[in-house]
Length: 246
Image (cartoon, rainbow, N blue to C red; front, side, top):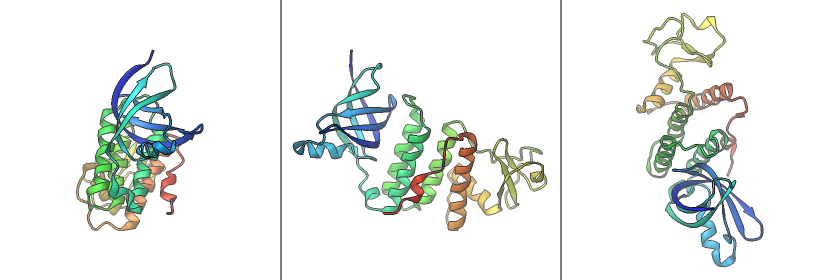
């Protein structure tokens, strides 16, 4: 028997189904990532309703929820935010889709994660309203995402000798163990971390200001985090959203 429930959710993807319906993948506050159907959404008279469930929209949802059913039914939907400034800016849109891609690829079905949900809403709000560089905003989210799913980057001290004052030196990172100082980095196979990259990663992790960072360092930080995630989740094959051209 179905239970009528109310929740909030971010639309991750939308797929046409049958002649008039759509199936959406939603990251919800109370039920984790679920699939749900909105019947009749593509009827000509219901065209406005169909647009409500476009990807990136943050919605209030009423669902006919049944635990034994793979696809739930949407009874009613209303918009909390559709993030208009994101959808009018190509860079904001690209990195917002990268957030969605991380959730789609790494978040298990039905796993409730209130911290991740709150952080995701926060990052979309920042994309929509902040003047901070979009690549930096996404870098902060990526760092946060790694921590929340259990793969936090260890940057505080050298894994081998325990040295903590690492700023200003050439370092390396062993994906299994963590950061290595210049005196210990030759003892393991590693990803090279120059001083500028280390300082920027610390800015992302600790939410420090990240002004005047070179684009090459921002790009290398994202590549490093992709490689770190791929090491721990071999099925992860980097982010396709970075390749988007509009």
